Length: 188
Image 1 (cartoon, helix red, strand yellow):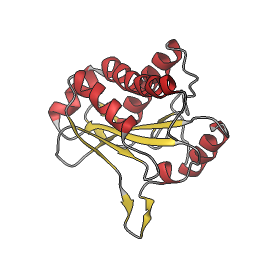
Image 2: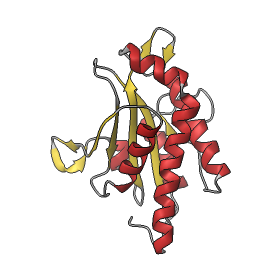
Image 3: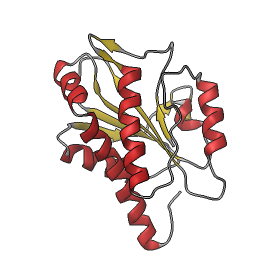
């Protein structure tokens, strides 16, 4: 399940011509199309500029999750705050294998990956910080923050490499799935 964050009246972050909701949708479409071409059953949470509340997103995800099957949820976003590089957040219930595969592919594409990590809720450290990771059950959930919108190097690289980055993420997912298929099981 590919989840392009924001949409419609929720623009996300904006810096000059970089509008996060549009970037998230564009890169998510590349991930979606690349996985479909590779024969991976894939769903795109939104395929146009529409507003979907967090609760509606969670409801849509839960409808798409197949019980007793392997489900991966990828959310795309960007950050702000002056740093430079991508960060990947994965669920507390999961190992870092998928995050590592995506990180490797992004680095091969030329994007600096700062780190991949888990982020705990400070109010209850047994839970993930983000609801989009915490709430959907029976999923391996990842948030990919592809760079910092307020960093001109990240901003330019992201805008000029949507296709390359989307294919890199899809390749990381595909490599991860293929690795576990070779052993006949999934770890989640």
